[in-house]
Image (tube, rainbow, N blue to C red; front, side, top):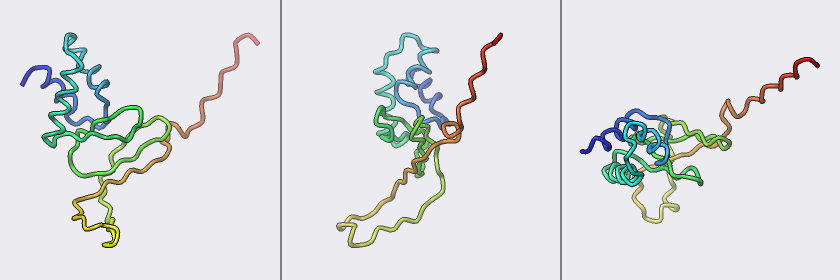
Length: 131
């Protein structure tokens, strides 16, 4: 375990912001200015393979990473792309006819909306001085 990988894991520990690989890189780069993006990407891949991190494809512009591997759902702002965790379980049964003989292991629900920050009107422009 390298110090760089430890720094990546420390950054992700308890992080609820669902950062992209670039955001993780930028945050850890402050402490390790010579670290490569490949180190971040490879560490994220390893954590994902070990089930310690989930890769989210909720944002078409970039993949995000969820440091909470427990089953949960997401609430996504369609304007600013902010992602919040929804820890409440939902009983969603798939009718037998729609299962195509699959053994269902779980589900994931994404809720889309507009966050309070994006929904609030812009502050009014201040009038110019001396007019």
